[in-house]
Length: 238
Image (cartoon, rainbow, N blue to C red):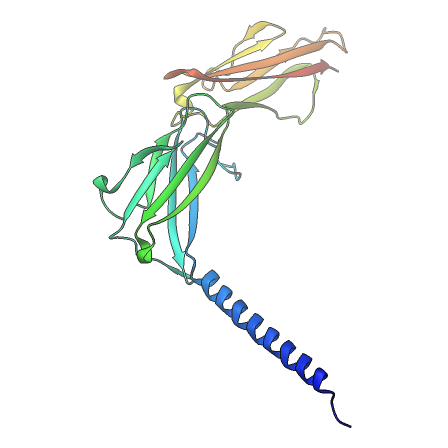
C-alpha cells in the first residue's frame, strides 16, 4: 500500500502546525513563569475582641498597614536598590526620596466608612522594565457594636438579665478610651459599676409577661467624637 502524495503533504503540514504550536506554548509558558507577581497583605489597626478570628477591617480614620513582596520564579526578588513608589487614591505618598526598596506603608483611612481606599505599588526598573505595578482596593467599614445576651435568646426573666456590648473596629487602643450608654425603652440604664460595657437589666417580679422592651447601647470614642456605633434589640418578658 502506497500513501497518496496529497496525504503525505497533509501529514507534513499537520506536523509543522503541532511543532509550531508547541514552540509557541513553551515560549508563552516561559514568559508567564518569568512575570513577577506581587504578594500583598494588609492589616488594620482596629479594636476587636481578643477572641475575634475574622479579618480586622479598617474603619474610617483608622490606620492600615500594607506590606508586599515581589515574587519572581518562585523566589522573593531583591528590590532593595530599586525605587518603590506608593500611591493612595492616585496621590503619590512615598517615593525614592524616602529611601529605596520600601516594602510597607502605614496610612490613615478616610474619616467616613462606606468607601474604598486604592493602594498602588510601583517598582521602577526591575529587570530593566520601566515599571512593575500592582493596584489593590481596601474596603472601609464603619465602627460597630454588638449586644451579647448571655442567655442566647430574646426572652427576659424576672430578676437580673445580663448583657454585654462588644465594640468592633474603633481606632481606640482599648475599651478604656470608649464610653457605653444603655437605654431600656428610652430610659437610661447604668452598666455594671466597674465595666460600663456590661448591663444587669433587672425585671421586677410583678412585671407583665409579654411586655416588650427595646434595649439599645451607644458606644463612643472619647478621643474622637466622629467615632461611634449603636445597636438595639427587641426583648420580651416571659
